[in-house]
Length: 305
Figure 1 (cartoon, rainbow, N blue to C red):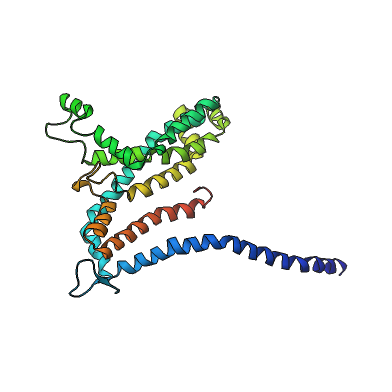
Figure 2 (cartoon, one colour):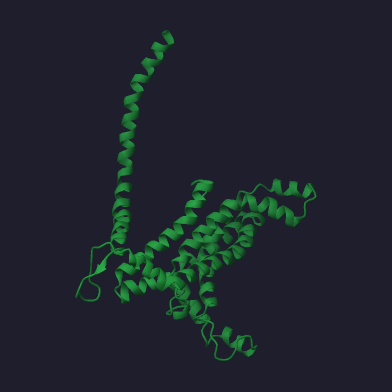
């Protein structure tokens, strides 16, 4: 009874303190909550409402009224189905290519240069160096390098690797190349973060157990680098699927390579078909949320960052 009396006496003053800390925490969270409500929830709600709007009867182009026209979704899926499929195929291909290029690069910087901190820092700087230049300028530079007048295309024509009259820009190759190039740093940095912490004693143990280098790589190195690989794949695939710069005919693409981002842009800015553009945006959002949700459920949010 004496211990119970002491316990009760100690718990009583702690409760107001906890309540006070909760109020402070809510006050600290308030700016973030207001920011999300103003710049995320409000535009999202507006997008959902717009996606169900119907044209005003006898109205001009671009005039719509509030309605519940769910057929907007079936219409855009039927009209722009090839663009949606193409977007995810291009994004998935670019993600795989970025992984193939980024993993050796991240391994070299994170593991092989670990004994040379200065060179490691220099290598890391070179990876993020493209961020110092505008995304548009980098893509525009590749448009010049892959144009018909460039030495690269002239060499391909000279070696008869490219038939006369064929182009490099405006093809699926140039769009996927642009996506891969622009998003390689997004893939390299998460993998580097995982490999930089790789305990090499596990790799040495694999050799001591007579495992081949390939077996050690696939059974030790790759599983330990898996959080970086998955995070890099997500942060590469998500913006690549919604990209509209590389596939634009003003840069590396053409009308035959238009992705869902280009269709959304055209519906919003040119055709003024706002419900169709909003419906496409929400379809893209849901399609991207599916792999992200699966990853969060499987591994938790800690490994996502």
